[in-house]
Length: 504
Image (cartoon, rainbow, N blue to C red; front, top):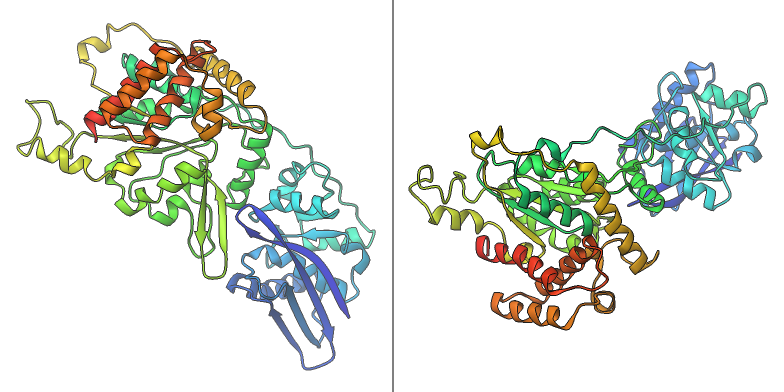
């Protein structure tokens, strides 16, 4: 007898339909899985066998052949356990073939027949709904699958639970309505004493989605400032939240079925490999830049990252996506992130301080900053010097603005950008490019003249000139101005000129 059941493989966050075909035929007892299975899929034979034994079933003494179609697509992951087991049960006549044919399934089987969580349930539920199928998944991930909208979700605790459901002895109800996660307590700018220039840069970066680098000696507050940037960003739009949640689902990081509604903040250590940062590995999993999609990627001690790893960021910073190339396939993940970096001016960290700098100054600073390539730095919009606050001033300085007040201005600026670009346009000024930037800049003649003159004197590249205009557009949005004025261009050039002087 031949039974079929749908499941999915994953290429990035896209689902690829896989048909599980199980044939039970006369012959010497055997249990074979074909169709380019990886080791985890091949081992499903023993998990299926043990799960059935635990619920009082035994495999028939016949030849059992499992084919994962299409046969030329690599199948990876333990989520094929459940569809193989269900299709086998249908081929054995234990559950109706016509009933399981209306569903897709994914889940990992324990030796006792219980279903364990797997990665990719949310994109699988969306893929099943688009094909008019229901989805059978572990009960702990029913709420996650329910975010797919009209998908018919069958959340099961165990294999026995499913057998009883399809035989009519027990009914599995729909999952509980998914809940939005509570707003996490954020870090507040009130905790940062002084540093008004850096706080202004954070506001501009948040308002326009611009890349930012903080340069200063150890203990000046660079990491403290960067950690407070996510608290200034608005919530993700529904489409953005679903896209980000799909990435986290494929990575196995979506907890309790809750969507990611706040911009993610990722801060990998400088020892992270290129595959960990941009994506890759044996199964081409999403890297830190994809997990930071629509959020912030914070790289502390930027020059300490391997040169090759940093150079791999150049293309994703421009295109908003990263492609992991393999001999068998190319996997593309979204990677529209906001880069925030921090670095010391030199290895010892005290370049420019005569009392503390090392004997190699200023050559040590040149060598340290030389680890960063010009093309990478050209993709940074705001260069900020962060100087330490004297201890006596820490107790006397007035408290600054709270994050809530700054976030309100950022939200207003983002609203103006959405109105300007429309639903199908760029999400922020940092994404506006080419014709979109030219037609929406709305700059005064003297503002453009200043930008052109400064670009020549500072020797800005074409990319640097365009990024300066985007920052000026953001400054105008923060000021509530429909047009980009000379003062907005002047401030944008101030942030850019610091980078030319300090790091170039």
